[in-house]
Amino acid sequence: MSTPIIDVRDVTAAYGDDTILEDISFTVEPGEKFIILGGSGCGKSTLLKHLIGLYPPAKGQILIEDKDIAAAEGEDRRAILRRIGVMYQSGALFGSMTLLENVRLPMEEFTELPPDARDLLALMKLHLVGLGDFAGSLPSEISGGMQKRAAIARAMALDPAVLFLDEPSAGLDPITSAEIDALILRLNEALGITFVIVTHELASVYATADRVIMLDKETKGILAEGRPQDLRDHSDVDRVRRFFRREVEPKEEK
Image 1 (cartoon, rainbow, N blue to C red):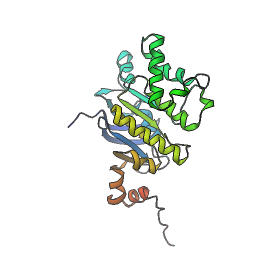
Image 2 (cartoon, one colour; image 1 turned 135 degrees about the horizontal axis):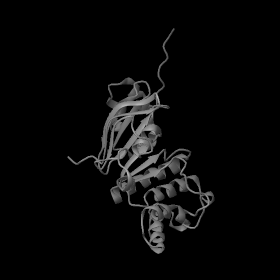
Image 3 (cartoon, helix red, strand yellow; image 1 turned 180 degrees about the vertical axis):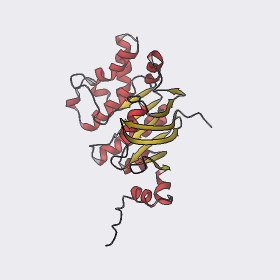
Image 4 (cartoon, helix red, strand yellow; image 1 turned 135 degrees about the vertical axis):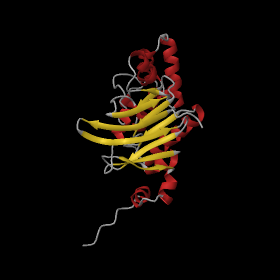
């Protein structure tokens, strides 16, 4: 069995005295399409922020390629950050920069490549997401779905081993959302990139996920883990089956 590319060990995530997640553990395998989901307020975004090193765990460890992202400092931390790419929910593109300049930005910070090489690599990333013809466009000049794809291209700028996507389908119509799903599948198959995706879009979950974890606000833990189709059809927890079937919880009769 391969070594996990991400290993979350007994992690507690908290803001001050407010504990959001408590003693959760899971792994992500190399090349896996792994989805984090759950109801509103269950800690999906909090977990993502911890996984990418924005916040240290109150307890436990988060290992990326066997390196503790919270404990690493200086060049060791920069080396870990070079191995991950992040697409934020809004896209977070710089509005005053062209798509090419947006994708080139991580290379300017983390590499010593000459300008011509950075431009060429940035253009290659835009071609990978189908935006090669829009390299000179500003974010305001393209659609929301294209902005998401450009953000994925920027997240891929340094050839990361893991791509973290925060709600990639948020705000998109069903057709554009399906195009993002197809892009994820294509990049995963062609480049072997590991994807960790936060989403609540069940259509995207069924289309892309190898495995999911379902976070639970009440227990502050992981309520279910496995293939989404298996959880929908065979979970022992009624609440899990209803979630994956989009069934409203029955009201108690008075």
